[in-house]
Amino acid sequence: MSHKVCIIRGDGIGPEISDGVEKIIAAAGVDIDWVPLEAGLRCVEAGEPIVPDRTIDTIREVGIALKAPMTTPIGRGSVSPNVTLRKRLDLYACVRPAKTLPGVPTPFEGLDLVIFRENSEDLYTQIEYMESENVAFSTKFISAQASERIARSAFEFARKNRRRAVTCVHKANIMKIADGLFLRSFQKVAAEYPDIETWDVIVDALCMQLVTKWRSFDVLVLPNLYGDIVSDLCAGMMGGLGVAPGANYGEGCAVFEAVHGSAPKYAGLDKVNPMALLFSGTMMLRHLGEEQAAKDIENATERTLIKGVKTYDLHGSAKTSEFAEAVCSELKA
Amino acid sequence: MLALHGVDIYVHSSAVPDAPAEVGALKRIFISDRGTRVQNVEKHDSSRTEIYCVRYESEAEISDSEVTGLLSAFAEMGLNWPKVQKLYKYENGDNAYSQPY
Image (cartoon, rainbow over all chains, first blue to last red):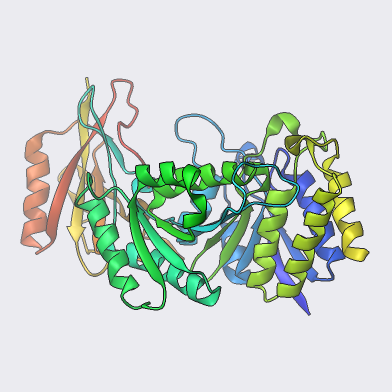
């Protein structure tokens, strides 16, 4: 069965890693009709919005996209293409699995957790004002509606994937109103899932506990800012941003993305690790119902790593294309 | 020195509020929800909260009396506004406030 999927190949190292991932997915026997779309720096340079309306409309219509990294131009008035996609398509749940992999050295053996970051509000509404010459206000916007929505996503995921516990991460001891609402919303939803253990933890305590007793955690639910920070912490714990996948889910569509940047200085060098986008691709395959292909790719990637075929970030010497070819060979073996 | 050029009025409403297009020198620029435009947007996927932001700006510098005049108009229309935020420009004319998506 053929699947129609939008693809944004991005800029910087984006096109190189996309090429490898597309070949691996094809080698796994999944027939995808890729719909190429533009967004990012190239659009800005062509005088268009950083995410053109036709890109938004097509993703909305198709319902699914795989997105390689894009560069956010630096400077006043520049907007992030990633945030634009999340806002325009209401991709409210940012899901970031963090799991140690064979062949990827890390002190955090046995790490296996999934982060649910609320994606639509908190300080990321980017509502800011200068109140005087020397004082700026930034608005932390928390609603019960969005907080309950992300909590429910996490509990549904936990139930479907037989996860043991869901933990709410907050700072309600200090931000008693905003984070207090997030926590109360979580507790309200948690009551609907008595089969799943629930905890709450203050975000600073969580950071300490993550690096001392990481096996205690399973599924985490966080407001936007804490989720942004903790998900990168966990990416580092699993071996770096080069291996950390991510997905953004909304009601009507989902966008799967590598969470690292476009690394323009490595563009065209055939050097960077495509695993983050590849594992985002396996999340996408599961979303499409291609569970076996996703497992096959993950197993083939693990065998490739165990054989020592790794890119420079994992202290290997394989080029992007060589790593992709090695995974394809494992799939065909 | 910052110069007053507008105001964001946050409105508690179950739907996009029917806020006045213009009051005195202040013209309505957009209505947003959580930093994303929701008015005059052909397709918008964003779920809504119950707090909308209505932005008004003036070409020329304004005074507090124009802000209170706008609030009076809101009160007369029965619009419930839990929060008001003044909008300033820097001396070079740049906005000292963020823009919505």
